[in-house]
Each structure stands twice: as structure tokens, then as C-alpha cells.
Length: 300
Ligand SMILES: [Zn+2]
Image 1 (tube, rainbow, N blue to C red):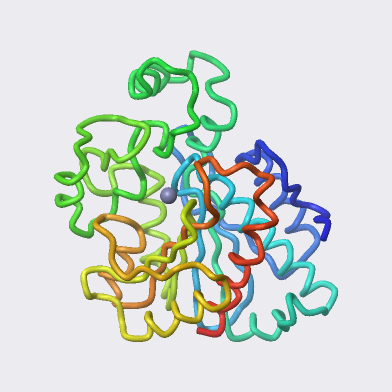
Image 2: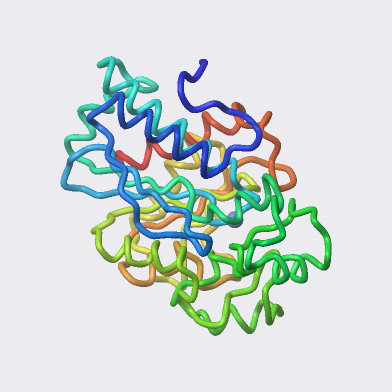
């Protein structure tokens, strides 16, 4: 199906997302866009609200820069919801308009806009204040395809106060790097702070963090996950064919912190298969599986 607003193309970045959100907002009263903070380089991090129901659910994408295809997955999802509400038609057989009277869905499509920009376009100028840090962290290379971190070389999904010290000891990275550097302290980075504050200000019953790649769903954390997480992840497996994995040797991630803090279901979904960044021509094969997981979460 062709998309009218969000174009599934290479180079999807903060500028395109901002423009798409502006257009989507103009086409529909169903959607509200609220800035939840700013990146290191001052880019606004928007959260998109869909629906007005009492039960709050949250999805996010692009915590990791070279996993930017997850922003596109979320933006296409947002557009399909809006289309469905506007035209009073179903979304994959589901009356999304009715569901959004019971649920409020909060989507942060791009947690790490500076990192995404770096992967997409490199440095356009050398007057970027982090030019030297980034270049050194990348061992002098201007190829940033392996870059996951924010623009200060901090891995935003290693920043959360859930056994952060353990993560520091596990990762043998002591300074800015393309990935795996947990930063000088938990929540030292504005993007991670924005996500933590946003989460604390809401009452999310379930969260999904989209990453790539591996076709796996991580659903446990140090035995803090509630019993229903298992039932929900089995549902996700069924609708996607992805493999559920309870525990991985990792701490300080967003979903780890969410599970730890609230003992509610939190999931990291590793979309697609291959080498990051996944090529955009994989989008339409990843889309139905990820869409099914997101839709299933609304009935969890
Ligand atoms: Zn990731």
C-alpha cells in the first residue's frame, strides 16, 4: 500500500519526521505532538499522542542511531492509525478508532535524532562542537554506519538507573564510542533524561522499544517482570514469528528500567535481520510483523 505522507525512503531523519508530523497533525484532530526534550545539538524530541483512553501505552524507536528504520516503522504506524480514524475504516481488521477510546498511545519515533543524522549524513560541517570527540571515538573514520550512540558517544540504551554500574563493568568502554559506552553517570544525556522524565510523568501500562536486528523479543529483567509479560510475549511471537527471549546479559536499558521501576510489561523488539543499518528495502518485509506486535499490544 502506498503511503501518502510518510515516504519509505533512505535518509529518513529528524527534519523529514518533523515535516511529516506537521502535515499529519494538520490532517487530523486525533493526533497531538508534544516535545519532551531536546537532543545535545538542540533537536526537539517529539512524542505523538493518539487517542484519549485511560490506559496509557508507549512505543519508542531509534534509541540507537543506526537503527533508524524503527523511526520509519513508527511513523508509518502513526499514519495508518490517522488514516483509519479519518476514513472510519479498519486498520488491519481492527477498529482502531474504538480502541483509542480505551487507550492513549504515546509514540516517540526518534529518541536519538543527532545520532540518526550522523549515520545518515555524517558531518556536514566541522564547526559542530562535537566534531573532534566523534571523530576520535570513531577512530578517525567518517563512515558512521556502525554508530549507535548519541552525538557525545554515549549509548542511550545503557543510560538508565537499573544496575547501571554492572553495565559499566560489563562494557569495557571507558569513553565516547560508537556504541556501548554507558556515559559518565546514569541519565547524563539529555535524550535519556527526556525519556525518563516523560515515562515518570505518565502511567504506562506497557512499553515497547523498537530496535534492530535479530527478530527477537526480550521480555524479562532480573525477575521483576510481571507474570502477564509471558502471556503477552507468547501473543507477540504468534503474530510476528519473532522469538521470545526472557533474559539477556545486559542492564541499564530503557525497558530494563521500566520493568524494574514499575513491574509492568516492557519489551525490546529486535526488528528484521541482517546488518545494521538495515537497508530500507527491507522495510515492507519487516512492517507486517512489527505492526502485528504493536497492534497486539493494544489488546494485551
Ligand atoms: Zn538497538
